[in-house]
Length: 136
Image 1 (cartoon, rainbow, N blue to C red):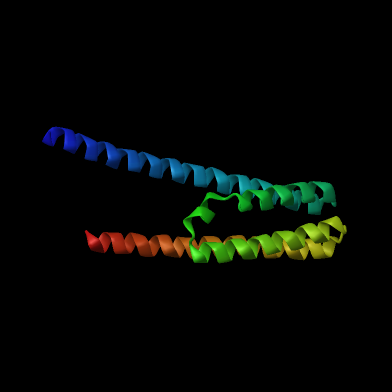
Image 2 (tube, helix red, strand yellow):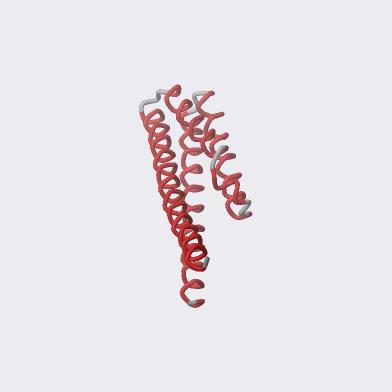
């Protein structure tokens, strides 16, 4: 019975580690896809191909609306996601009007929200790692 309990605990730990690795890979892939869409927006603006910019901005916005992080209910993430969505909406509106200057400024705001969010979460990850190390 004791061996069975040890095996069950080991399976849960290994399963948790595997899920954690899966979640990290899924997150990395999602972030890479967002970067691809952001590059597509930049390409569309640079070439003044507003349809390309709009298509990629819509994909970027839709992806952030279905982002797995929103399930975490992290208030900082939700605030960053809201700022990101507003910035992308501004970009979409300007691109639909074929307002290159406005769309370019909005793209800068989108990029800024990305950097701010990543800065926040790198800091949070560092703090959590320090707390975990101290708890050991």
